[in-house]
Structure formats: C-alpha cells, structure tokens
Image 1 (cartoon, rainbow, N blue to C red):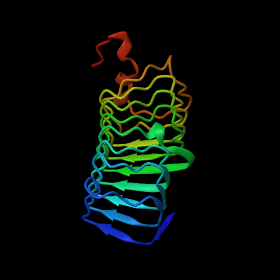
Image 2 (tube, rainbow, N blue to C red; image 1 turned 90 degrees about the vertical axis):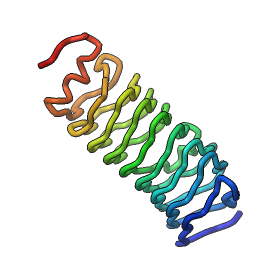
Image 3 (tube, rainbow, N blue to C red; image 1 turned 45 degrees about the vertical axis):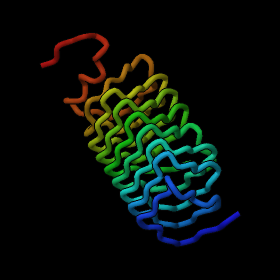
Image 4 (cartoon, rainbow, N blue to C red; image 1 turned 90 degrees about the horizontal axis):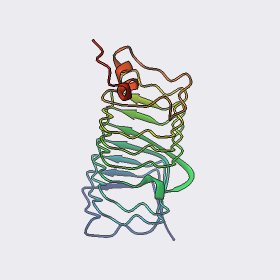
Length: 188
C-alpha cells in the first residue's frame, strides 16, 4: 500500500485521475476536484481539505481521522459508509447539503459557518457537538443523541424534543421556535 506523508496536492482533478489507494498522513489537498471520485478504503489521517469539491464521492470504508474540511463543497456524501474507527472530522465554511451521517459517531464535532440543508443526522451521536452559525434547513434529527450540543447560533432547524435525547443542549431564545415546530404555534 502506498504511503504519503506531509505532501501538498494542489489543483488536481481526482474525478478524472484516480487518487492512488494508500495512507495519507498530514497532507493538504487544496483546490482539488474529487467529485464522484472513488475514495474507497483510502486512509486519511491529520489531513486538511481546502476549497475542494468532494460532492458524491464514494466513501466506502474510507478512514477520516482528524480531518479538517475548509471551504469545501460536499454534496450528497454518505459518511455512514466510512470506516468508523478513529472517525473524527470538522467543517468550516462548507456546503454539506443532502449528505448523511446516519448512525455516525460525531461527538464534539465542530460545524462552523456551514450549510447543512437536508442532512440526515438520524440515530447519530452528536453529543457535545457545536453548530456555530450553521444553516440546518431541512436537516433530519430522529432518535439522535443531542446531549450538550450547542445550537445557540444555528438557524432554520426543526427538532422534535420527544424523538431525540437533548439533555443540556444549548439554544438561543430565537432558536426555541425550531423546537416547537410540530405544534404549529405562532411565536412572536
């Protein structure tokens, strides 16, 4: 298996040229196109993706350990297919619309300034995660562990407290409407 350490990959199109299978440690991927790329069984550790397009990439048994995504387009990703061992990611200024974290352990994950439209968080473990200035329009929270999650600056979310574990989750006063949506109330 190939091993890549501390390398910078810039402006490469991995939707056309296949990223070699292997272990990528402390690498930076900048302005790369991974749209619909097959990332099956590739191990990423301590890597950063900057301004990359990873939309519809295949993440089957892909290892994402201590990975930062900055300014990335990531539409329709199935994170549930990733290798769960040491899975740890963070997102800053990304577009993650229509992606799925079904049953994924995301404890303490940082989502900052990120669009999460129609993202599926069903049965995920988001304990102590933070959604800082994130748009959660249409996001699905169903039987999700939301204990101590910080939603204070998140917006456009609708969460049913009866279907989710929410002890000590944090909300702003403005965000309370998102918890009462199922009751069809007018909050002024």
